Length: 329
Ligand code: SAM
Ligand code: SF4
Image (cartoon, rainbow, N blue to C red; front, side, top):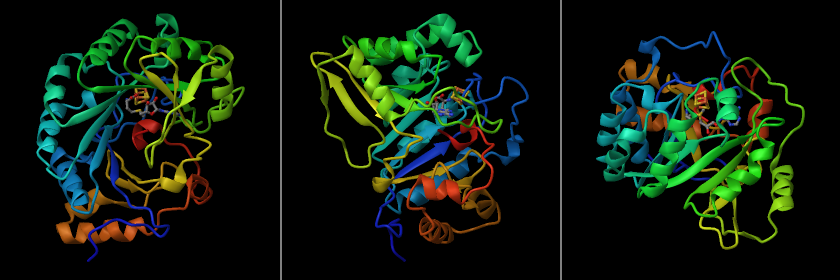
């Protein structure tokens, strides 16, 4: 048996995005409906033991980086204990977390001692009223305090900002201004039009080029940073500023050629691409007694179905109705 995950296009998979739960304590407009969110029965969620095992098996096949996402990972009970156990996996080089920042503040010192490298904090507005409107909850001050505490910590801080037409475009420049004195990277994400209620209508598409053009209107001395292979964002810096910024072409999908990622949803659905329908449910195989070798073979076979890019994946899928809180962003 080969011991690496290499797809039909020669791409090696080294990065797992694992959704810890489908539950969330916010209701961001672009991600979830305000009411009537379909959450799955608790028993359908992967247990921590199952997640640990999946990660271990994948790490033996060359996956060395894991991003924990959701839903909101910190709303699941005992998440910190899970992080502790995952940190013992010597084959993992990096554990990263994507969070809305509502519950993380008291754990920052603890996280610094574990194998956590990057924290991606999602914050779409620096204005309290606007933030509350986007998230449909009133937690701006606490999230902003968390941002400041994270920036001073030894963790690497990235801010995720979903660029939403008519909602936070006027704040793009404010986010970049934040990088003047703060050692963080702001990453502007193209909005993907699915929020759990089918396609979301937007007046204008704020794609990579449009976002960059807007930025260049306000900042003249911008330099391009060298990209790491398989990076999801194109990165820049305003000269003289401490931090940096990037743009993630999540929807225009110009980053697929070097894709090194797979996803596993909170219920165990294995996805080769953000835009595909999922290949198989790993939870069912585990609960039916599959051995580690059988799981490895399943992963190796499934990787062969990885589509060339997100457009091919989308063309082959059925109707898009799920929320990013299930897929894991
Ligand atoms: N709750 C955590 C958070 O918000 O950071 C983790 C899960 S969330 C689904 C992961 C990332 O996906 C967040 O940065 C969020 O802003 C982004 N996201 C959610 N829905 C999106 C959409 N429709 N288009 C673009 N990004 C989206
Ligand atoms: Fe929750 Fe994150 Fe979705 Fe916002 S983006 S509703 S914080 S899962």
